[in-house]
Image (cartoon, rainbow, N blue to C red):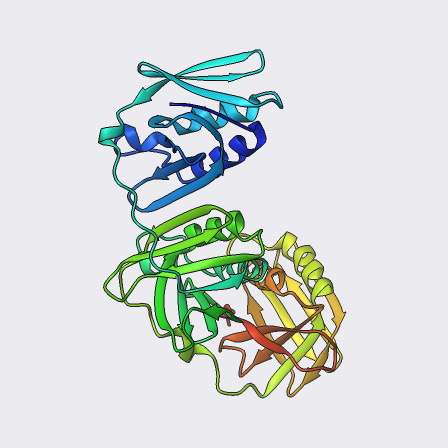
Length: 375
């Protein structure tokens, strides 16, 4: 194999492919990145850990086609450090020589024959705006569980019904749901997939920067989902299991709601929470025109703060885990936050709205369980 490629193009592609490399590969070849040079003038870089695969295709001046397997992290480190000159990759026996200007590196190759075949990308199911998908994934994955003993809750459930795509995640203490429009390949498409939150987040960040992102869901018998954008492809195994029926947690109606500046409430919670010990809640009391925040009690450090708030309904006092509340506020893409209540011991629903006196935007909903106070 012999080829020449632009340094920035190579470094970017290697870094993207190498992100899927396992930190502790079960077999040595899975630490490698597969380089395939074709006579059509394309260099393909692939990585696979039996769960997630990544492939990037980039233009190259291919003089001799071929395929080799080299250490992915080492090639990524080398590519980043090279000067801004064209890079030549050449195989010499069991080695690959990387030359760029006056720099020359020699890498040992691994057995290509032992490298597993990458899964095929399923047929495209539709397209979605990359930026909107990235935002939606970020809003939902904050609520996914990190507890690997409950693998189902570490996933994000994707529900497709025609041109509506819904993402939802929960860790049993909060639930985040985002609904958005997309362009399905067939108007009556209906599908459900459970994708690991960390995988979906990584894909959205790395592929969502372009104009459109293609989603590829196989038929019901498959356990694979695929993503494609700008010459980059990724697949992931789906999480197996039945997701809990969490939509029933949203109340049918909320007799009480309050509206407050998102930024002001965020900063106030951060300040008041400074005195909150681990697992200690922040207490919120909503009264006509005023929101009072408190943390700490007894002989411990204490903090209080008051904000302007619009209240519709009866006064209510409720307590939340401060970090969970901040996560929800941070996910709102709106200047005002609406908190809707049924009672102090029942979950509250956080939504955003553009104006103080306007309607809320329920395309993103963040349900938060309250913390029961002693006494």
